[in-house]
Amino acid sequence: MSSRERILGRVRRALADVHGEDGPVERTYLREHGERSVEETVELLAENLADYRAIVHRCTEAELAAVIGRLVAERGSGTVVVPAGLAPRWLAATDALQVPDLAESTPRELDRVGSVVTGCAVAIAETGTIVLDGGPDQGRRRITLVPDHHICVVRVPDQVVSSVPQALERLDPTRPLTWISGPSATSDIELDRVEGVHGPRTLEVLLVSRDQPSDASNS
Image (cartoon, rainbow, N blue to C red):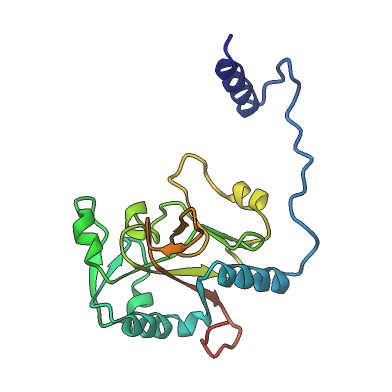
């Protein structure tokens, strides 16, 4: 038996919850680092998103449409791609032409779109990560990889968790998961950072609460 076959065998046994020759998989790792209140968890998410150079905004549900409209206008986007299940009220204050998320859209066509607006599946505070799972308000993966400006809505606190293990408990591993930590970026051997290589150059995250007052400003 090769090393590859041995490793894959262990993985299969672990996923099937079968107690093989190596015994059960230990899952005694920490599920989160430290104890935080809901408010502290949301604050940590905002801090880590900003650390990854995402632009963070806070608003209420009532303010959401106006904030999205302002961000699209400030970007100068004449078009915005829209997932099929996105709530129409989110774009009620947006003058840009709405482009539907279609299977036949080509990368060249999506590259000409100014912005994309989506929801998310979950947001992870400890890592500053937004996870998309292709849900109705998120659309196909490529609409968040090709356009240069991504506006992502996170419902606070319902969609915010502290840690990766907590996020995994909410996610379906059979769905197309996209994990986003800030705008797309890479560095060469000289550590020169280049943004927008394989995704949006600008990621704007809206932390949306139901009833807390907000001035809809950057955090």
